[in-house]
Image (cartoon, rainbow, N blue to C red; front, side):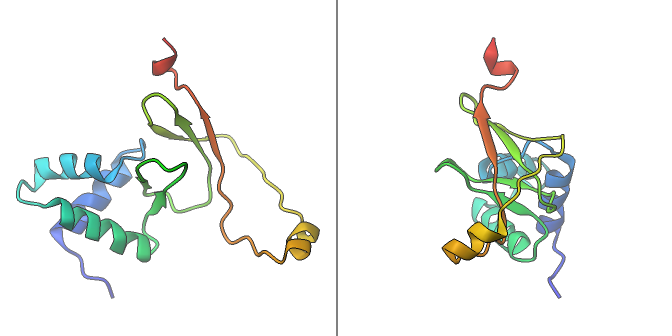
Length: 125
């Protein structure tokens, strides 16, 4: 059973309260306001533990810094090319992977990923 620590609880609470899919740096800067002596290494290690325990998801798309998300159910994202913020796609998006294609390629899909890229509302102005 994973240990509950003050650091882990603060990181998880920040992620659950924050729908912007923050990076590890953003998480560190915000959690540090509550726990001033927390190190970036502690934040990073805690994120790895939370990910390993399927309590959070890491979004590591397109070679940019990873973003973290407390929503572990399958869903898709928009990413702004200018500010790099990530947003959930709210409406249901259905992607069908043909069983025939899977069989032809011999590839088993375990987690489909979809990222739509463009400019967010703030960056369009």
